[in-house]
Length: 187
Image 1 (cartoon, one colour):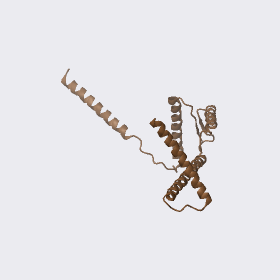
Image 2 (cartoon, helix red, strand yellow):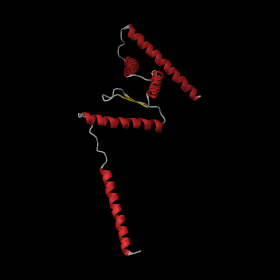
Image 3 (cartoon, helix red, strand yellow):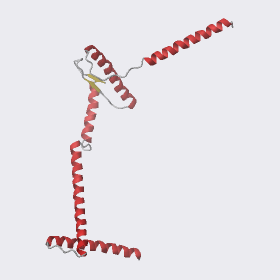
Image 4 (cartoon, one colour):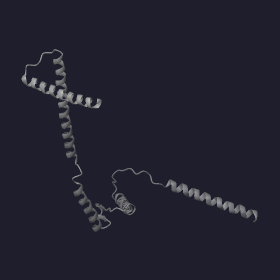
């Protein structure tokens, strides 16, 4: 092959590579900029954006139903159209909505709204508070019992003495149970 044909072929290939590289960088440079989310005041620009975005949303819902195999619908109402856009069609949208409503009724007993959740938490906290108060009273009585055993004067109130007697009997029963368990283990 003649030398001048080879160099022409290489030059041609190099030229094509340069074109491809410049084309690639042009495409990369043409990527979308981050959109600033703000109300579009120009009516024609807003209408144009609405049409593009509506088409994109419908495409995404369609892809979601195909890729994930789930029923989905889209209802888009706009000031630019007299009737709302319904995808896939009114019948399909009604089926999806009805399925959602049916599931909502079934799951309603499982779902908890914020008010009932807070009421449950309050009831649980009140129950816990009641239990802690009882424990504190028992500990105070036990402390008083030990103080009386060390020589402090007994109270003169009959109710306090009855409570103290109940506590002593309870402690004696618990001690007897523990002693019986220890005796069984040692045998």
